[in-house]
Amino acid sequence: MAWRIKKAWLLTLIICLIPLLWLFIDVALNNLGSNPIQALHIRLGDWSLRFLCLTLAITPIQTIMRWRGMADYRQLFGMYAFFYATLHLLVYLLVDHNLEWSLIGTDIIESPYIWFGLLAYIIVFLLGITSSKLAKKWLGKTWKKLHRFIYIAAGAAVIHYFWQLKGNLAEPLLYVITLFLLLGFRMLIWATNLKLNKMMLPKGRK
Ligand code: HEM
Image (cartoon, rainbow, N blue to C red; front, side, top):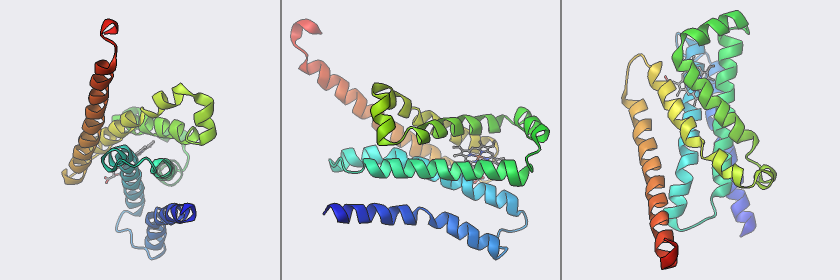
């Protein structure tokens, strides 16, 4: 049974690399359209946001299914959000701007949507480097508080997405709705737990 669970996790780990493989194939076949750098950028940013949403979806799924065995998947999807965001940032720095720091500095100052991208990235980076079991043990209660920042990262990423948008609103709207539903679910659980805790307190201690 344990091996079956490990196999499913390994399979998921490999499946999550398909978007990257697909991108490599499109680069090799010159299949990225008239603006390949922009296409590269967009595809990596989109996948980072998708993995961020998947990470957020794990807790509601666990609550609905009453099964606590998906924490490893939450960590895996979170690491992939970090991985694709890092590639997205590297394309911006290396391919788009050739590491010309004065150009990068000016672009960052002039483009507020990049500030939100950077905020999302800093959070995803901090969560990525503290996602191991060792870091969890070491940080104790702070770990949970720190990892709640994932909602701020997702919110900042969606603002980053909306702000740079040139046309179609349908896809970013889908992310906003998903995020609201996931956050709404979390708040509902939190409010229910608070109510239950209050009901269980001895009368004199309310
Ligand atoms: C967790 C962090 C981040 C996420 C999830 C993210 C996600 C996204 C998404 C979804 C898009 C829009 C793609 C589309 O139009 O379909 C985008 C665009 C973009 N992002 Fe990010 N991003 C992040 C961080 C950053 C950072 C740190 C930078 C640069 C410093 C950056 C630079 C850009 C640029 C320049 C675009 C516009 C691409 C274009 O249309 O030319 N992003 N990002």
